[in-house]
Image (cartoon, rainbow, N blue to C red; front, side, top):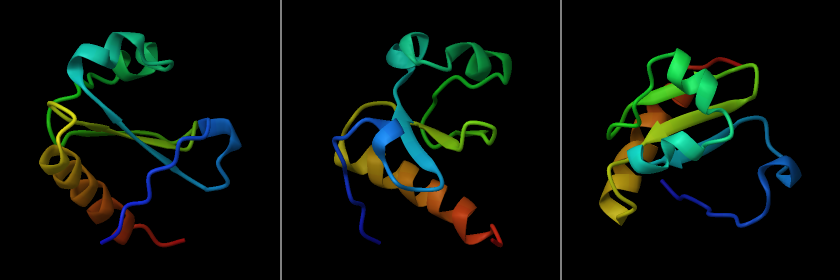
Length: 85
């Protein structure tokens, strides 16, 4: 699996679903914090929250290490494999 990291703003990205990695300490400053909090999302490692109305899949990571990001990305990839478009 290859992960392409982009540095452009999410609203400029040309894709159907954005995958965002969020650490627990940054959750309170996320632009959709109220929605994430309402759903009970705590940004723990490998937890997911789909904001389908916003076309965003939010993945929790404990820290921004390669291993944690890889693990969360693999969990997100399993979700995408089960979606039939």
